[in-house]
Length: 115
Length: 110
Image (cartoon, rainbow over all chains, first blue to last red; front, top):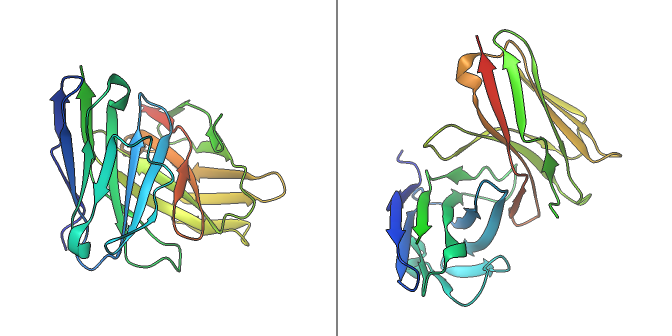
């Protein structure tokens, strides 16, 4: 079974540009989460999809961030326009069900650098 | 400030036991987790404990939970060089939203 994959693994862009990150969850996982780790600090929750619906987007920093999950499969996270403080590692995770510990499987992350 | 706190660094000699400590604030958390991140990899779930348990043991890993003090610890017995990684403590709400600590860098020396 393939794990959670993320693309690209690294992205270097200039301030003001647009970047789109992609996450492919494990097939059949309804829950998809985005997290971000900035500058070696704690990993922060961004949002949670259940299938194609946004269950919780309370962690999204501002309206420069837009997440979608059309069809309830893969998800994209677009940052437009990017700012310096958006640099960090963006993790995606998926899980099958919320009960029984809700094991979330994480992707390797996308390292975003905004210059 | 952080809601989940953990020490940032731990150095341990190979063969010794490692203990990583964590404090959390949300007493309603149902599950508490320990994740491991190796260089260049995503987070790997090591173990989790249900909030009504005091202890959970899984091979070399022992998790202790003190709900009164909101204190969680992870003990790794017979620490090996492959245990060198960043360890994250996390709590979750009922929808699975994880709240992490900043991570403890564990360095295992020969």
